[in-house]
Image 1: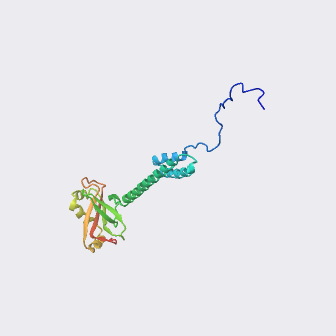
Image 2: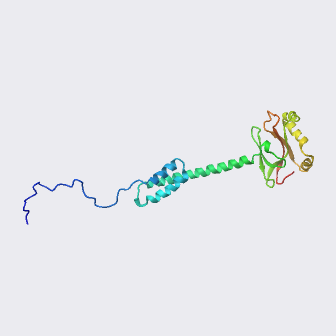
Length: 216
């Protein structure tokens, strides 16, 4: 049946001013914020947090649900590297604390402490406490505090300091030391070039062969 009104008086059907209708399909994906956060935290050395967020981001971007999978992977890599650095720093810190804790300072030295001895190139001597049941270089045999009565003898340094040790070692301890062959007597003080009252003087013996038990 024909259009009783004839053809479209306006010539053609008007176009949809809003464009083609939505035909369905996947909605546009957005970049995952967690993945970005993982990358940023990995870059600024927050390794543990960045590593965790990286794995979360990896899951959230699986199958193209969100963009940013590359950010998540990079965050994981940076997090792992940062974690390794953290572990290395931690180990170094623990070793440093253990080293300092074993160092025997003159004002902390006690008679009977077993020691390892480290003689530096600049004639500095460092003593490290050891278990007497373990192999060790020597033992502290006397300690004293500098005062007016001994300052002159100690200030002469070298052999004079060692000779002074013979005056302050307990006689009973000296008898035990005499029973051990091959001992060498030595002495040290905080600053041998500037001896003053209140400084701490330490006498110790060392052995050419490692000791594995206490002498005193």
